[in-house]
Image 1 (cartoon, rainbow, N blue to C red):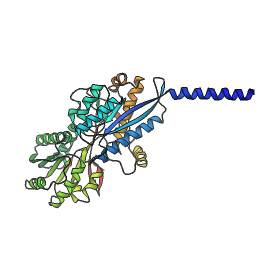
Image 2 (cartoon, rainbow, N blue to C red):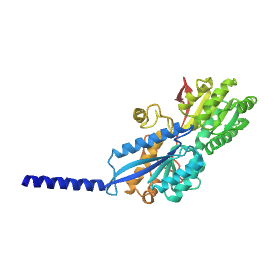
Image 3 (cartoon, helix red, strand yellow):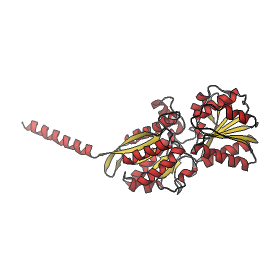
Image 4 (cartoon, rainbow, N blue to C red):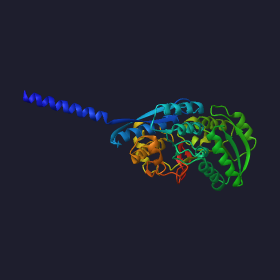
Length: 377
């Protein structure tokens, strides 16, 4: 009888301890937004994978904040690369009271969403949107951990003028905030370097037929084309350039075309060999934890890597790092700590300028050799 009583007491105490333990676990939601559907879904899934991997790694650390064990959960939303859907997704995350947001992918969705996050007091960090206008309003909730278009567009123009000695360039952009922004910086820098802009054409981020604008450009005899846009358009454009015999024309673009997917979309076109693209940050080989991280990523998400997932991984960690330093998951309490960030991530050491831009951003130029993206620097 006494033994049974002792066992009952022990079981009861264990149950109470279990209840206390369960009550002491606090679920903290982190939002993520990117195009999970449509032509740019491969970028969005890659970005979401990076954040999901970070959440899994953070939960393995058994983090305690404010005296409670924290269980992080990712709330992933689809903005379909559409500005209206982007603001709707941002409002949904505000209404869900997420603690912070990683995203968005496109500048055209991130810029309007940034006001929504500012108004509801939730910080967001993008590892992909590069238009410099993002940080111009001065929101204390807006951060970027990748080089912006001022670095990318200018870097490409310097390479075109100084390294390749090109003189004549034609411009095409897709009229999005990203495409127009990076094209404008390239154009401005190219003109300052003495290059001539022989033609300017426009398309959309839904187009697939570029024969008319490429034919017009071909008549102007350019050394190069700069395309401000994304790979769903760049791939078919490269195929159509080959069909028109434009196989000697260099093809420049920013991080939107700097993917493994563009090689698939170009479908063996010889013009892929003329691509020079730029992306913010170091190549994976030069990132402090790049290759080890990529090995883990590929094991979890085979053949899904694109460009930005190391940045969404780091962005998720940066949010949580600020929470830990503030000893609070409340955005009102921890957001002021973000500006003080000095975090050693996979992509490098992350610290911010007063406007939320990354300090000392690096940039990588790449070309395509045998169908594979190959860093030049």
